[in-house]
Amino acid sequence: MTHEGGCLCGAVRFRCEGEPLNVRICHCRNCQKAMGSPFYARALFAQGALSVTGETARYASSEAIDRVFCKVCGTRLFSARRNGTAAGVALATFDDRNAFAPTAHIWVSEKMDWVKLDDGLPQYQATVPQ
Image (cartoon, rainbow, N blue to C red; front, side, top):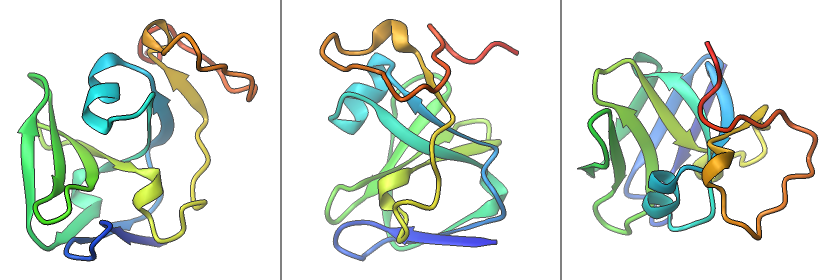
């Protein structure tokens, strides 16, 4: 299965091959700031399954994660693990924005107080336990 998407201005396009490793909504403070929203809804793919065309820029938001965005319009596209293993793709950037439904909320200990989680999905105070 192939899933495609891109940024607001169309300068960056991407393709993900196969199915995501997981689909989660992250409420951590880093994701809130990086995305400029209360949470980050993303599908996690192996980095080898993701191909990108167009110019992007990166910002090291932590020791482990780079945030990748379009150099032209600034659309926040990916959170790429710096070790090269996986990349989270923002769900709203897929051409089919309904292609994936989240299966869990993570880092709910840092969610904004006014966000109400009543969708019945599992909630984890930090990351999903291994």
